[in-house]
Amino acid sequence: MKPETLLVHAGAEPDPATAAVAPPIHLSTTFRHGPAGELEHGHEYIRESNPTQDRLEAALAAIEQGAAALAFGSGMAAASAVFQSLRAGSHVLLPRDVYHGTRAYAREFLGERSVTHAAVDGCDCDAIEAAWRDSTALVWLETPSNPLLEIADIAAVASFAHARGAIVAVDSTFASPALQNPLALGADIVMHSTTKYLGGHSDVMGGALVFRERGAWHERAALVRGLQGAVMAPFNAWLTLRGLRTLSCRIERHCRNALAVATFLASQPAVARVRYPGLASHPQHALARRQMRDFGGMLSFELAGGREAALRVASRVALFTNATSLGGVESLIEHRASVEGAHATSPPGLLRVSVGLEHPDDLVADLAQALA
Image 1 (cartoon, rainbow, N blue to C red):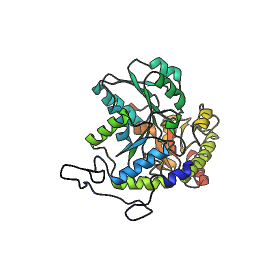
Image 2: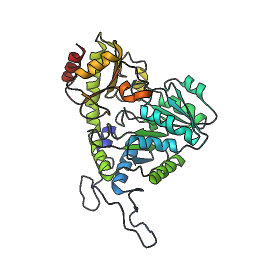
Image 3: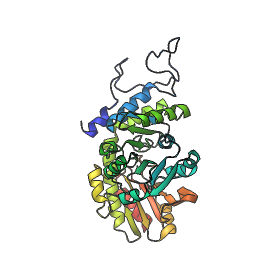
Image 4: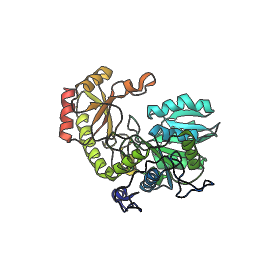
C-alpha cells in the first residue's frame, strides 16, 4: 500500500459499536473491571491505555512500518522516555546539531543518572567511530536536523551501531512519516513531535515513539510513560489521528513552497547561506534524495549582516509570523539563537523558517520586501 493511502486508512476502521466512519473519542479516565481486577475490554485506567490512544498508536506503527508505538503528551516526553530507559553507566552519542531541548535534557539530566554523552557530527561515520566507547548504548540521530537541516545517513549509522551492540533512535519530526521512514532504513526507534506535521494545525501537542521490534526498549519506555504519567490526552490523540488523514497532501504543498522560498533566498545578495536539502548546493543533497521522498517544509538561512540583519528581517515580515514550533498551515519564522538562550548553538545570523501552505508567490514577496 502506498504511503498516501496508508495515511488515510491506518487506524481508521469503522467503530465496531456504531459503524461510525469517523473514530469516536473515549474520554473516560477509568474502565470497569472484574472484582479481582479482570480486564473486560483491555483497559483499566487512562494512564496505562485508552481506546483512542490505542487507535492512534496502531496507525503510527503502520505508517512507520514498526511493530509497536507509544503516544506521549509531548515530543520531549517521548524523547526523554528513550533516555530514561538507559541503564546507569551507558554512553550516548548525540549529533552536534540537534533540537536544543534534547541537548538541554542531556546536559541537565543524563549525568544525574550516571549516563554520559558526547556530541558528534551525525553526518560523519568516522566521527561517530572516533567518539565510540565500549559503553555506547544509543546513537541519537536527528535528520533533517534542527535548525541546520543536516542529513544523517540512517542506514550507515544503524549498520555501524548494530555491529557494536548499540541501537539507533531517529528524531524524524522535520521529515514526518510522509517523507521518511527510519525503521525501514535500519533504525530501532523513530521519534516524532506529533505537535508538528502530524497534528498539522498548531493546535494539538503530543509525541510518539515507534519501535522496529517489541522488546526491552519498548517495554521500558512504556513503563516510564505509565509511571511518570506522560500520556497523551484522548482528545489530542483524536486530533492527531485527524491530522494524519491530510498529511500527504499537506506535505506535498509544504515541500513545493519550501523549494520556491529556498530558491528565491539563494539568489539574494543579503543572504549568505540557505540550508535546504532540496537545493543541489546542500552538502547532503544526494543522500536526501536517496533517503527521503521529498525535502520537507523546513529551511534556514543566514544573513550576511549577522544577528542585527537577521533581526531586521524578522521584524519586517508581514505574512510570516515570528513564533516557535513548525509544521502548521501558516508560515513561521524564528531567530533561533535568541530563542535558544544562554546555551545557543545556532549561528547568530540564522533564521529558521517553517514554510506553510500559503501561495508561494506571496511568501516570496513578503521575504523580498523584508530583505529590501
